[in-house]
Image 1 (spheres, helix red, strand yellow):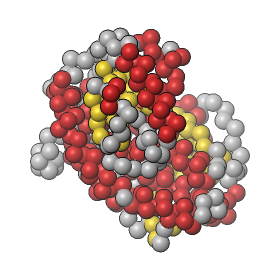
Image 2 (tube, rainbow, N blue to C red):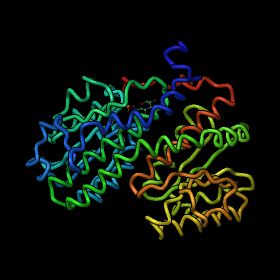
Image 3 (cartoon, rainbow, N blue to C red):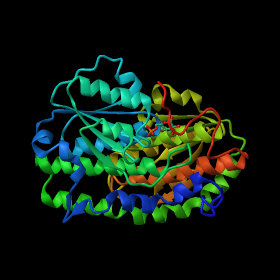
Image 4 (cartoon, rainbow, N blue to C red):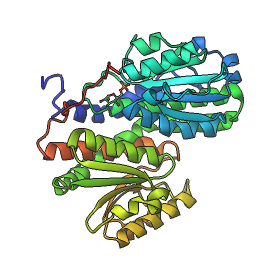
Length: 372
Ligand code: G6P
């Protein structure tokens, strides 16, 4: 009913708007004096975490992109190699595992059969398992040695939004905890990063102010047949997520690419008028990646692409080459993907709405897929 939607036109619109609060809940009580504390990790004590030599994250759909964002942060902070595997591919790949492997599953529902079977496979192979889950007492956390609940609140829309951001934040908390027990970050670095995380809810509230800009863009693009998304580093899985959102609820062909891969194939797709969203890293945090993205933008612009840049506010270098710029609040490297994804969620929502589609219940999809 519309009452459950709290006055919003759809659950998806409501859940996008709830993101600042959802993240505040993911963080609540878990940062104490600049140190991450996750009591639910009980089955995965400091000795176990010091001993692991590899992390494999299994997930499907949007959750796999949350894992792919967090991979960069966990590796950077805890210096443990991390790979991300689609749950249904992992099981049949004869994976190399040992008792020093940690298997992390990421699942909003905690009931996705493919992911549950991957966790059981890992457990049977003798690896330690950690679940990142949004649903209290779901099957996957019950089958795991430890759990980090995302506490984002119930997510009703099939297209995941607040759970996605909360999954990244939960994995970041784990990465910082791991860095602390393994001694790979100093107390000052931990304090700085936990402070950045604490600031995310406020920045999310700020980024939601782009809603009107994105709505205008979506209305203008309602007849578009294909949209491309480009990103690098943490912006790459965000590009994939932006494309997935559009496929799921707008039924528009969409593809995400690593920006550096453009010249190895996808640039052939660029023809006059082709819309391309580009995730632009901050020139302050990542000057080299920033300048490479700016040259990618120039290359596609020269071939007639219509460029929509999602860039830090005040980034003057992209202005001359972008048809539209969606401004983001100033944020540090690993916080940026949490903000960059919001305009993409809003774009899919607004485009689906402009096409008169059922935003919350897209055709052929289920919120939770409990079959293999
Ligand atoms: C389904 C949903 C997706 C979701 C995926 C994983 O396919 O339609 O939106 O990302 O399952 O769901 P989970 O509950 O495991 O995060």
